[in-house]
Image (cartoon, rainbow, N blue to C red):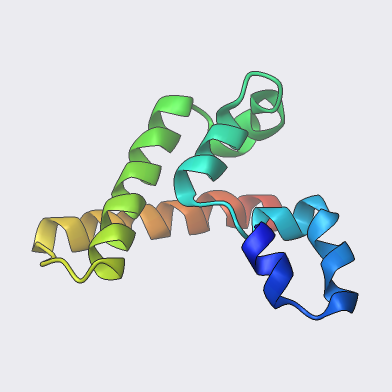
Length: 98
């Protein structure tokens, strides 16, 4: 994040001190760790139900993302698993917004 701060205009730097801005720089596993942390999980449990299911979906999504990002060959299973994870997250987060 320090590198990003150096690239941004001076007036944008204070925004990086906010939690919302810092979240933009989290990778999938860091986001998973925050959500499943002992202190924060009670806030997310009603949305995601179980840490185990959440971990599976994050793994599926991470596999798809990493294969795309690193130009690896994608199997049909990885694509479908990634799509299923996206649909699951959309469904779980859609319930919160409704």
